[in-house]
Amino acid sequence: MALEHRSAFRASVLLACVIICSNVLCPVGAYLYNNRYVGDQVFRITPGNDEEVHVLKRVLGQMKVDFWQPNSASLISHNATVDVHVKRNDTHGLRASLKQEHINYRVFISNLQKEIEKQTGYRSSRKRRSQSQYDYEVYHSLEEIQWWMFEMNRTHSDLVDMFSVGKSYEGRPLYVLQLGKRSRPQKKAVWIDCGVHAREWIGPAFCQWFVKEAINSYQYDSVMRRLLNQLNFYIMPVFNVDGYHFSWTTDRFWRKTRSKNHKFHCRGVDANRNWKVKWCDEGASFHPCDDTYCGPYPESEPEVKAVAKFLRKHKKRIKAYISIHAYAQMLLYPYSYKYATIPNFSCVESAAHNAVTALYSAYGVRYRYGPASTTLYVSSGSSIDWAYRNGIQYAFAFELRDTGHFGFLLPESLINPTCTETMRAVKAIASGLLKKCEIDSTRFPYIQYDRTIL
Image (cartoon, rainbow, N blue to C red; front, side, top):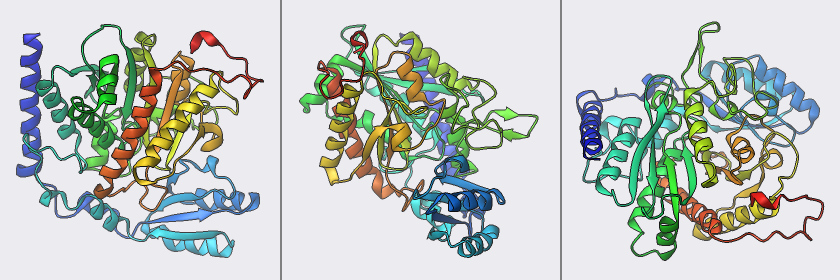
């Protein structure tokens, strides 16, 4: 144990040096991302019928656009909004095509570079992160987050344990914090991962917020104290470490991992399409250059493989799987890959209802909830379907704020309210695990429940 603490201390010192170098000795230039997004725009398009859907797919297929919502052209449907990031050289052409086809649209981000700079400010002038004052209301680089993890492990060893489940494609450690009072060795557990998609920065911010709030409220919040006494929480602040680092340093809207495809000279896989459940079916792509590329085979990505291995090993104790994403203001549960009702639908639906009710109680923000396939869209290879199939009977994916006004550029001023309300929702889900769920068979008489899994 002493050796482990010395190793952790040395690693924390090294990370601190990296942070100092990145923030002081090697500051980011005057313009974030070298001004690459100047003049880029985000369009919100609403096709009104199937013919307009067909035309829109054709129009967008003729130019290279970055799909924000949904995440591929195949998922476009009528009367559902389509948010796309368009390069400055293509904005005039897209606007003309949409007008010609009489397809409803509006531009809700007219200069993407300015919105990026408003989200975080110029980094070279931002407040330094220090050991004595870690700011939970700003977005942090990967190095800062990992340094913070070491610090939480060092300063709160009674509640926090830190370990790695493996390494990423580029060799970065995949760190996890185990949060909970060390009493029974085989306590029930909850898994929470953030940052699966690199550009969704509010996810890692929430995972850090959750750990901070859980530790700080342990002494005075009876609900949190009970949760940490009776449950373990496995918190993975950044699942896609390579992609997140790349989105911080090079491409703000990078989504995938960073593995190489030498044949097509493209990089990355959609980590939420790489799980071994209906792999690369509807909603996923076989083409390595697409944002929804499912990979050459299931669990091809070392990040996915490492987490899957850990979850399989501990699946008898892990009672809930929660994955944090953005954006849409939704709480989703299986199935994603098909229109069908899960066997324990009544219990999961009740847990989701309690969660969004708790979330609403904070600031009155409304979330939709339901099966991912009907609430959002059909997609294969997702982590919640994989977790559910592997025996984790409460599997959820949050799509945090907002519904498109800011999209992936949620301002730092909204980190606090977003994380505060989501904290209430996660606490509600975890609290439900400590109670026995009674299935209302009269409400859903057509479902054949397997009571052994509840």
